[in-house]
Length: 364
Ligand code: KG4
Ligand code: ZN
Image 1 (cartoon, rainbow, N blue to C red):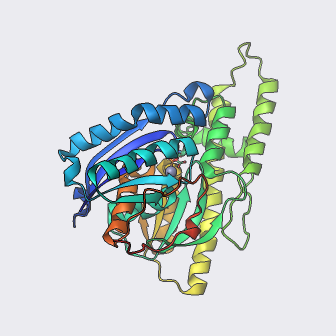
Image 2: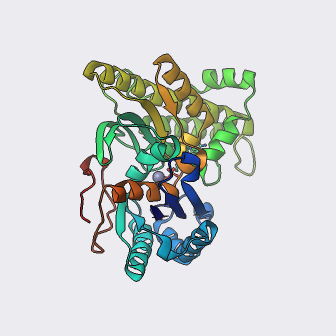
């Protein structure tokens, strides 16, 4: 079975062709992502600009994905597109493109929840069996879930305020770093040598909200506020005429920030492991998904945590952690193989919690 997957819920316009091959490395036939850079000058994603950029690029991205796979539309068994959650203008663009292809070529349409795309990615990349523990850390979401099956997600905890990626992006912006903030903040933190790292933690101690709470919820707004307070202090003491912040101090602050986010994530996961043991849930792995999973410090800490708990750790390749069409195609394939097909009247949804999903319905 072969399927086209389309993603456009934030600032990446993406399309991929996926097949249900027994070997994981032969499942992705093509994989095209156009990352919008139009937002750089605004320091964050502007929904209206994003929607227009998707509209400009969607047909080109789909065309490239088709050409790269050497297939034609009549070789496809279905088309899957993100129907939410996300920036609604962008979601509409990808969803309507998918529906148009479905109608024109008379192939099934499957509307995918973007978060389910992230949640099922480890099955595309690593064949992991249900149930598994999932840490979803992206620009819009921070959640710990147990994936029991396709459409069956038990949410153990979520963020009470900002998402981890959002906190990275906002802190990076305050540090004067360009969009996208997360990777730029990681690069800045890497400028710290051993001595700087030591000084960073002494000079810029940061809070780790929710530590020790007997649940899996997150909070990042206190961390963001603490970063702002340090930056205001540093700016007030700086005598730079051009308002730039001293690079070495910013690198230390970035390092301390990254360590704080890591501590928050690890602490909340520790409680998830306690819960799983108490409930005797036989999870097969800890999987990390979402853009923040690209962060090397966080990936390494998760690896160490899983070693300590003697559980398999799965971090899909970075190109599958950030938004992409392959994850949407794969989620579509899992549902299509189970007999699901959605009507062309399926609505786009700005909000669509994973916990409200249902297992695939046999509709064909
Ligand atoms: O999953 P994703 O591509 O988009 C959604 O939000 O759905 O995640 C994007 C987020 C952004 O907040 C970005 O700054 C963050 O992931 N991110 C990172 C890194 N790479 C991307 N955060 C920290 N370190 C990174 N290396
Ligand atoms: Zn995402």
